[in-house]
Image (tube, rainbow, N blue to C red; front, side, top):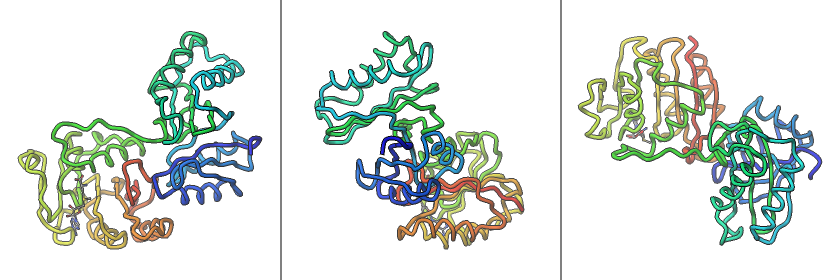
Length: 343
Ligand SMILES: C[S@@+](CC[C@H](N)C(=O)[O-])C[C@H]1O[C@@H](n2cnc3c(N)ncnc32)[C@H](O)[C@@H]1O
């Protein structure tokens, strides 16, 4: 398994099989074995490392949240000394990293060395990098990511460019700080979508939020300076109601009417069957300008994930054209679509 490109892949819990299927489509036959069942797995491509990365990053999978190369691995007994010995051996065998910014990312399984925390390992490797290799340890904006994955009996080591990992967050686990008075956890989904799809909501003027309550998405868009029209029969958070840029319709999506081309952004986070949701969104598309953006979460009710994606994209076309579909870290039994209105 070690000659071809070998990687650790991570998906949201329960969706790793979908990620493995996507990898088979991109790489042909793929051998994989579980590290954390249903979530984290080792996979070996038939191609070499660079070709596998090229194919995966060139056609980014929906369910593979993160990948990290396995450039070397060793069995270990859980001792810090043997771990550091292995890391130093790998660093010394690599090209010099003098002056490079390196983000050390350490993950471990629950049963791996219970008395050694990931942060202790990270600190030790950071110190070594700056003292012996004159590299600069960083958290964000790295030139390279040094990935360590520790299991009960094995250490996996890889060094990669951040873009080769699909996400520069450790394991693709995007963390946002919870704010005082935050309306809902759902806000993180839209924040993550903004990053993952390379959007900047401050560039939009007027948004329609369908299924807006209690108002996490609405509050983010108001913070970004947009005028927001929120539609939901359920109550919006009382703290939002007095906002001068908010219009709130306490109605269902099929009970409201707007002017044509009133919005340049449409967002929808209704926890409904995907086909019903698509029907309601379609009914309001006249209000989205041509060239406008739509961000929509799609519930994956019965686990027929690929079929649900196909159906919803078909239901929304030809007006809405898919730019990217991604299961985000903050999605649970759902994924998020980024679409543009083309006609
Ligand atoms: C997951 S919540 C939305 C959370 C919201 N994005 C936030 O950030 O707080 C789903 C919402 O969709 C609303 N919903 C369900 N059916 C709807 C319909 N036909 N029209 C409008 N809203 C609907 C529900 O009332 C519920 O408040």
